[in-house]
Image (cartoon, rainbow, N blue to C red; front, side, top):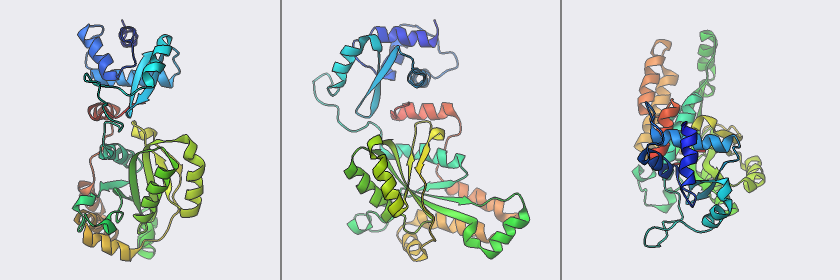
Length: 317
């Protein structure tokens, strides 16, 4: 029996939509498939995603409480009925309406995406800022800051740019991350939060894991008016999409100075950027290594990403 056959066999034995964890448990408990050298939960989750992406008519899914639940399409009537109610625990109480992973769980995935694009990135925690409980500081800085350095094939070109136009040899970027944007109200609230906390940066982006397709027209209008870009983050971060590009602007050094004063980690990150821009050519690589140490961890392998998503209950498409 193949792994896909075992998944279909497992689904035969459920009368309602079920999570990939439940499917994996059934396969393991009934010894339907031997996962030799594979991580069971990650493997099942990935293959369920394959069923959906490839349009396999045997399997469908519904989304509840921020997670996906799978069923056989021949049980469609029953599944739809189940999908119209919230999942309940043994006492019949609601499990909740929020997705079962936190916003900050998405940071590792997003930083992995940024790293694949040559961007160094670091999370800036609001609670570590001075006067963090003061509402006036609430939208002072973004969730993540990033920097991308200009690269040239010729060392001479790079040196010329660094000498004449140092400010153009890198871009500093601001990112505000959200789990989901489902309504016009949420879009405007989060978008203007991103506007507020990216005034200092060359580029600013609003990033979300779930975005209501009906909001695309309003996003485009806001993007044209205020210049903040929008990125759709995927569980496989390398499949993430820039829906709208950010408009470039000059750095606001007065605001950068303010942020350096209120947040130590922000200051350290900016300090590392300055070291790289002012370093002699022979010290640039060592300065980049120092910057990397300041950055968030990231993943490069699909297996590591699948395992991470599984451990954090992040839905895998």
